[in-house]
Amino acid sequence: MNYIAVLIALATLPVFADVNQVFKNIALKSDLLIVDEHTEFQFLGSLNNEDKIFNYRRYFNAGLRAATRLVVIDTQHNLVGMYAVNDWATHVDEECVYFAYPASEGNSICLESGQLPTQAWVDGSLPSLYR
Image (cartoon, rainbow, N blue to C red; front, side):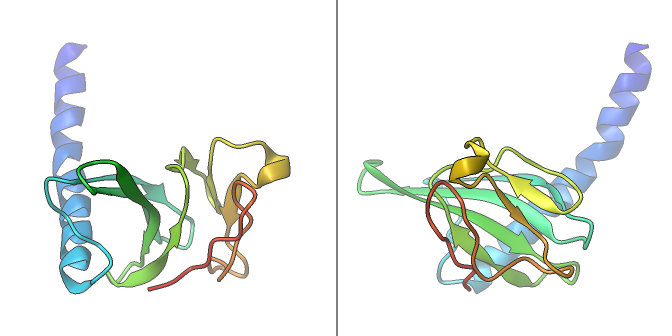
């Protein structure tokens, strides 16, 4: 049983490495995304339109402040855009990205006609998709 689990883990390792490299390549082309020792990012999953969703956070001012973003990359490895959010998203399903907030305060960003909206209701604010 452990042998199978190890094989599955090894088989999926290059996929995650490739996804992380896609993010790093996008960051090199963007003035708004920096990947260094003050940065953390996480591949969250893909929507059914195949956009890849990443949580991103960069600390600055000696760690006193942080910029938190939800970053979207398309199937051609282009930056679709990002939303400035207060906290990392928790999960992705077929059409939505979810946050750990009550629905009444806005807890998701969902595809509209196969695309992410230019503005969404999340945690009582209206983050906009920007590049």
